[in-house]
Image (cartoon, rainbow, N blue to C red; front, side):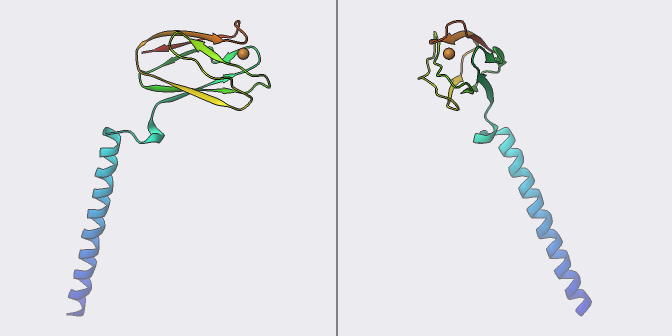
Length: 121
Ligand SMILES: [Cu+2]
C-alpha cells in the first residue's frame, strides 16, 4: 500500500512536470511566432566618429530601428529627406525606425562631408 502511494505521488509529480515543461515550451513558441518582445525588435547600431559613420553603408530589413551613437567629442546632427536628429553630444544616441523599403542617404548637418546610407529591404 505504501509502495502504491509512493508510486502514485511520483507519477502525478511526473505528469505535472511534463505538463509544465510542455506548457513553457508552447509559450516560447507563441512568443517566437507572435508579437516580438522589445528585446527581439530588429536593431542596428551606427557609430558617429569625428570624420565618419561606422558603418557608413548599412543594409537592414524593413522594421529595423537604427540607433546612432556619437562617440566623438564634438557634436553632430544627422539629416536626410525623411529624418533629422537633434544635436548629439558625446555618448548621446538617437534612433529612427525604418518602415519603408528604399535607399536613404544622410549626412551630418554640421560636417557635411560625413555621409552615410541606409538601405532598407
Ligand atoms: Cu558632424
